[in-house]
Image (cartoon, rainbow over all chains, first blue to last red; front, side):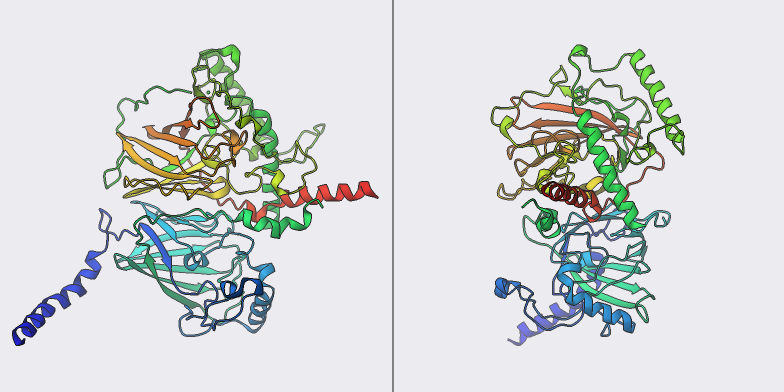
Length: 261
Length: 340
């Protein structure tokens, strides 16, 4: 018994520091040594309902019963609440009340950044030696992170203009040119076209990535604030990006009143 | 500003549809083994795959008919004289596009200015986009395929749409299908290819399609999972990217421009080949095999090119689909007026 215990200590003694060291070196890397983020990723949790801490509650349609109820969960906003200015806080509450009419997700509009990251759908990163593409399952939305010479946003768009660079093993993406029509979640948390977002992607180990986004929008927030959450590599044997072209699921809602009676 | 851009986009889509309805009767291409230019070495990615990356456009074959006119027979390529004529035509078009304002006596339409469209920069050398069968004609439809409903285009054939379902999947901003996403149309022909170890992705600007193509040799996904863009698997044949795509939803888009024409079936199998032949050219080829729809397989091929300054933009089609709203509300308003 004692010998087995000693062996255990020896094994642990060797293994523990080795584990710590290998986390960073064990991650997949590109031929030039940069981390390779390529793969199918997805967030867990309920931030897609509300990026703030929230209790479980009934959904808007009682006919859906428990299926349509909103699960409670921890938020992804660091250090508490979103620093809305008073008028903006009021607008968020109104957005929440009118969310079935106003939430762009209801209409199958592009999700914008950072919302696309933690929706309940996976996304695929395709990392080349130059640019990096992200294809999101929801609404076939996608974007390209320009890793070359900085490119300014030519026009405002739903998914924004992304310029990336590496800071050590972290991919830092500067997102500008967002059109301000996207929300952060299904609870009416919103931004304006003045928003500037900086995302940080870092592999913690081969199957986990830490994601952070700093949100700066002085039109409605009193200070920049940050969200952070882990992303998980999808490990199912046949995991692959699906197709969720949701336009046709929203047409009756959007155009139904214009159908010939 | 956004509203204006979106509204103009909607209009442009409508105009595209109108023009393409007209262009749909045309076709043709190569079928030979594609060879790289002499003295040029195909680039490789740092991990050793052939490197096809860049933003490519099928612009040069805009206006090349899908099917070859019967009187041209089995001649796939234009004659030197025809190419010279085409060059003159392109030069004239470039001059016209430079005009900022219409001449005083011109009747102005509701469409966008001509220079909004994309233009060929050099003549496409083919007489049709269809290269096989040798006569450049699309094979006959099966009896059952002939009975399939074809959704209308921009509503120009159906001025009184009863609902959005009377419009094509393109006009509804859902998809143009795989071939519709790359066959040349009057604008939005950009396709950006980005590669990673184990994957190729093709991002088509119009309707913001993203095809993620695994290269790992894995089998197709379950036949119970069906999609508009199909289930794609790729592999390298020398320097050629070969993509096999199956698992399509049946009876959605067709093989015409922008996914128009007779809808294909759930038996459709596409085999595409992307071969880079020089720094700025990829020869594209697709074999269409759909025994439930066509009596024999057929093949379309054409070059796609990289052009300085050409860049994909976000194509927020559904988000700005004022054309759909306006067409339906217009139809309802007319009905109301008539019943008064």
